[in-house]
Length: 168
Image 1 (spheres, rainbow, N blue to C red):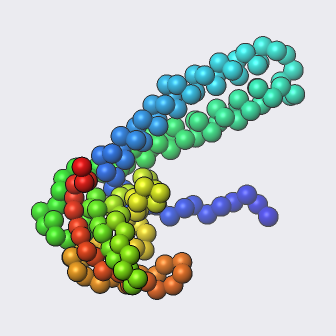
Image 2 (image 1 turned 180 degrees about the horizontal axis):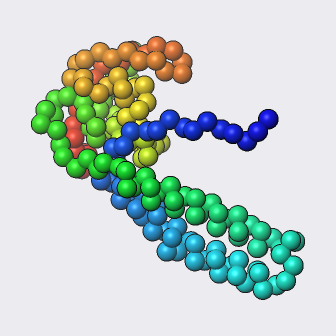
């Protein structure tokens, strides 16, 4: 069996200003700080002679390839992204960037922010706009009932709040 992997489906090209800032900071960190450090380690390791058994050299070169790959990805991705700065005209509907509070069948409430696929993080309640729940939420109003397919089966939720600015 070969190493071929089919390409991943392209995610949406939207990102919040915070997400863009985080990606630019990661790019800066990799290119300006981490890469020069690893390059220095590899350079010093190469001076030691036999490179075939030199762990610093082997793992340093591997890490350089990983850094370069990530830098290429971030550079290309940042060029193609559309940063959404504006609040929509109708703040009573769910659009990209909204914080949406939903209530499930058990009466439990959960708040998510709908963000781009490059910045989603469920531990911080940031939901990718390409996820089934976000797709079901987009375009809906307060008190609308949504039905979506989750890993545990069909789920029903009601939208209880929509806002476009974080609670401070």
